[in-house]
Length: 175
Picture 1: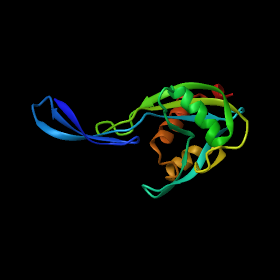
Picture 2: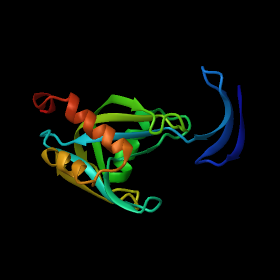
Picture 3: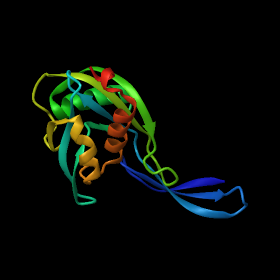
Picture 4: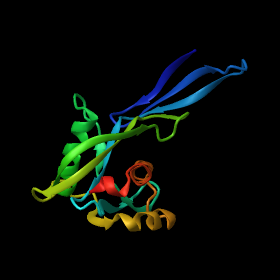
């Protein structure tokens, strides 16, 4: 029926929506809106390894592997964001970038479209310019299912990206 804003910053907007369900039930529902994000599964030229960052996230107090990526800047497309973020965070430039999938990380509570890309091939073009993005390393794709299973990949964008890549990219397509 409507929505009113409770709080706003550059990172998050909190609101309350007046909602009527198909059953007729009416209630107030909290809403959270955050900027869009873009991330990429960066695979090496041989198609055997993926570039992941081992980093700490203070809010949930966890260490985990993550894909390079970040928030989509105003006036920038998600593809431009991910190309820029790969270079800034890793020092590598992707040879090709293609869209893979889009998703909402907490549909029903949060508005924050996430764009996942596949970046095939990478060349080292310099040192990373972002110092706080963790330690990036080339991880064998064969190790990824075990990392997920052991709880070393907790970030939703990283999980979606890696699982999408493993499920939809045949081994012969990775070469």
